[in-house]
Length: 82
Image (cartoon, rainbow, N blue to C red; front, side, top):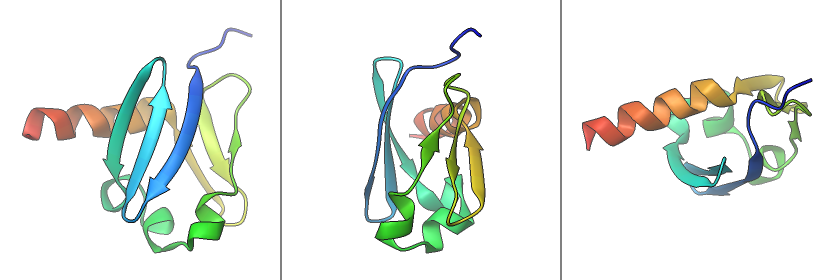
C-alpha cells in the first residue's frame, strides 16, 4: 500500500486545527472543516486515529472521518481568499 500523505501531527487551538502534513503546516478553521469537530470538546478532538495509508483521520468518539485531501482543499481555498 502506497502512503498518500505523511501526517506528522494534528493539534487544536481554540476554533482552529493545526495540521502538519507532508512537511507543511496548515491552520484550518474548524467551522470550515467540520461541524462535529467545531462543537466537540477538547478531549474528544484529541482522540483520533490516522489511517496507516495517510489517507485520512477518524475521530471514534465523534463518528467523524476526514480525508487529508479534503483538508488540503480547505487550506488551499483559505490561502487564496487571504
